[in-house]
Length: 359
Image 1 (cartoon, rainbow, N blue to C red):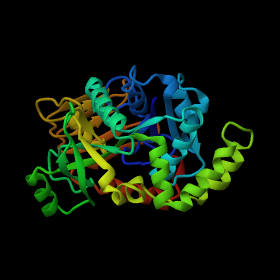
Image 2: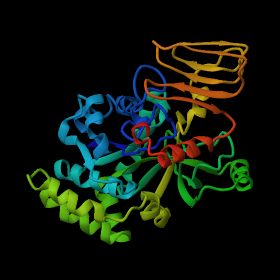
Image 3: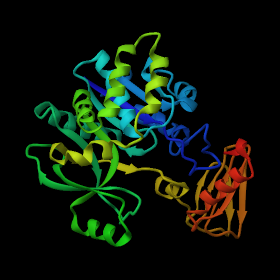
Image 4: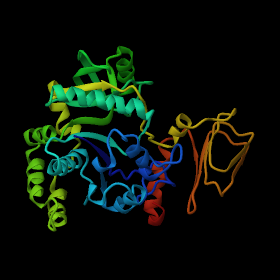
């Protein structure tokens, strides 16, 4: 059966001051009335019912995950003792799925992306599952057709097209690291490359066998965990084995080493990784002066600003241009929109000044 595995271990602070270490962006509302993690779970339904939905998150975020997802069974919120990247995360989910379903197929998706419409997402997942039914050892990735020459994403080069598929599906020819602007422009012009969005479909047994082949140390520790699944000794075993696993992405651990077994499905849905406050103009409408407003805001003679507040706190601007202004109950950000590196510098300064309650 098909299971959804929602990876919710991120702890990024690029949406400071709303995103904090205790409340990273997957727990924030970006569009509509649901948070990103709630959207990630709900877009899988009804194709994947809640009883086959799993969430992998960190110890800091387990309580918030359970609070925001009250319908997900508590034993299906898997808590990592520490962050070890996506290969251990996926391996941990795979052994849990196989304990309850020896034929489990995994849809692996991040918790913090914006994807729409849900119907096209579900159709793409269904196409991937149909491919796996015919080719059980296949690893399917979703690729996003580039809309600009991004230097922030990894790229997937497509090869020969697979026949008889509803969605465009191709063999993977190669993986490419985050390129410079010149190379990214060449990738885009060629029409052969997709952005790697980190969404995968495969059999749980297949990915475990691949981990065994290419990361035997990681696999050995997963095998030591298996006997403890569902027992009183699980937490002790997890805290012993998981921190010792290599911190490595599933791309480096497996996918880049088995391109002959990997296929890429051209995603038919809209996708945004919501990487920073600069994503809001892509997700929300702008006024006639190019301002993107969310919450209680009033702008006068202001242009190109991103303004975000709550519905009970007014932000009013006059004569401003190209600023990011974000209000929360305990901190307010005012920044130059053109300087994407400023937030990183600001957070480093808060750390230096030991203002840890605000991070």
